[in-house]
Every structure is written in C-alpha cells, then in structure tokens.
Amino acid sequence: MKQVNYKTIFNDIFLELKPIEKKGAPASYIPELCNVDPDKLGIHLSNVDGEHFYQGDSEERFSIQSISKVFSLALAIRVIGQKLWTRVGVEPSGSAFNSLVQLEHEEGIPRNPFINAGAIVVCDVLITYLQDPKQELLDFIRKVADNPALQYKQSVAESEMMTGDRNKALIYLMRDFGNIHNDVEQVLDLYFYLCSIEMNCRELARSFMFLATHGMDQSSGEMIVSPSQAKRINTVMQLCGFYDEAGEFSFKVGLPGKSGVGGGIVALHPGKYTVAVWSPRLNGKGNSYMGMKVLELLTTKTEDSIF
Ligand code: GLN
Image (cartoon, rainbow, N blue to C red; front, side, top):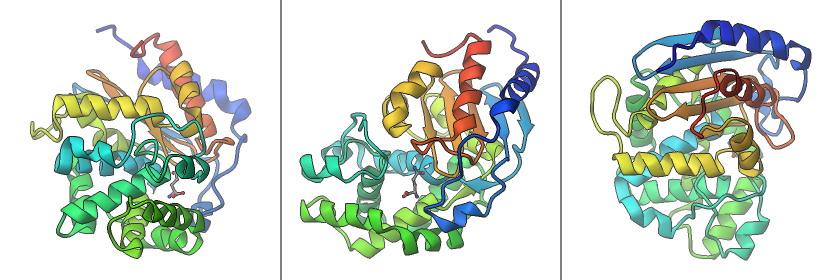
C-alpha cells in the first residue's frame, strides 16, 4: 500500500479551507443542536492496521444524528436479513431527507433506509423483532463502537420530540399505507433516541470499522454482519448516504459515507480505512459544508478513492 502522510495532508487541508470556514449554518430546526460552537472542525482517520491520524476538534463529542441510521440498518439486517427490503427500498431518493412527497407517490414504502421515513420503518421493524429495542439498539452501537459508555442524549431526543412535526407526518402517512406495525409514539421514541447519540470523530471512525473489514469487528474478530451484508450497507451508503447530494458526494469524494445534521460525516475505504469529520455548519442540503470539502480534498490529495 502506498505510504501516505495523513498528518501533512490534514494540515494542508485545514489551511486550504480556512477562507471558507464561516460558510453554512448549524441545523436550527432541532433547538438543542444550536448549542454548539459552529466553528468546530475535527477529523480522525483510522486504518485497518490500527493506526490513527487526527487533527482539530476530533476528541469533542457531537450529535451524530442520521449517521446512526447505519447502525439501525445493520442491526435490522442482522435480525431479519433480506426480508427488510420488502418494507424499504435501496434507491437514492433525490429529495430532502424529510420529504413527504415521494412517500405519497410510492405508497408508504420509503426509497431507502437513510431518509427519515426509511429509518423510521427500520425502527418499527426493530420494535417488532426485539424484546427491549431501545436497550438492544444501544448495546449494538456500543458493541460496534467497542465502547460500553456510549449513551443516548435525552435532551436532544426530547428537543426533537417537541419539534419533530415532519417526522410525525411521515410516520402517520406510512401507517395509513400499512407500513408501520407498532405504536406510533413508541416508534418515534426509538427513532429520536437513535438520532440523539453523541460520539467524537475517533469513536465514529471506530464504530464504522466493521464496514471497512467485510463485516468483522477489528478487535474481537466477531462477525457483526456477513461480508455480503457489509457490501450491501456500503452500497446503500454510496447511493443514499447524502440524500439529494449523494451524487455530488460520490462524484467529489468517491467513497461510501453517511452524514448527519449535527455536522458529522463518516466515510470509509473498504479494506483500508474509516474517516470521520465534524464541522457543524451545514450546506443547503443538510450536509456539513466543510466536511464535504475536507473529504473531497482527502481523496484528491491522496489520489485514492474506491474508483
Ligand atoms: N434527527 C434528524 C431528523 O429526524 C436527523 C436528520 C439528519 O441527520 N439528516 O430530522
């Protein structure tokens, strides 16, 4: 493998992006997400050999929001396998993460598990099949992160519960089409808690490592998902991880990844590394403005993407 000096590359990227560091704004539709310094910027890259490279605010925890939808998807696939795909699709949505329009046309079957509607259906599935869904989901995230201390953040979940009218509209529409099988309040509760998890860039990079190692946990050797399931999750990230900007991210970065409105982005290079970036200012599509640029420069400067 070509030897890359990530430390120098991160330095160069941070310097190069300095002039645009004030572009974009943090998400304000979830009030708790405004309580963050918008100028934070951190990156942590972990390779499959256990080496770590980082820069900036990489140790500070933030709300990972929709990045968690990769964990709920992985757990649902573990629990019900292929059957999941009768409830949710695998196509890019080409529309906003909280759009209602497509859902009406497609009769309550969300395009993919990473738009809000899709993740809500995944939560509904977990409630059907798990005994203690909230705890088992948290346990699963702790397992892939190799960190038993991770917690849901109640204030963020409650903040979203109070203001999440659009998510409520999505779930009622899907229930009308017969694609929600459990109590609406319970499903939304699991969804909002799922989105409330906090991690820092190092923890995020660790928790996505199983997807860079064909489904296997880096330290225990346990199979979290099968190689074929890891392939599918990575494919869905590649196609749908950035909502109506998934094409743009693929075009510029060339890695599978997932964003969240907390300003985090995780991307991975199967067989090589995982990388997490955090910068709370978002672009118009709800993805981290700087985060997208940092990753674009990373794969450009290293001349290494999956393509
Ligand atoms: N919790 C957020 C919501 O439901 C997640 C959105 C996101 O991170 N894109 O709107």
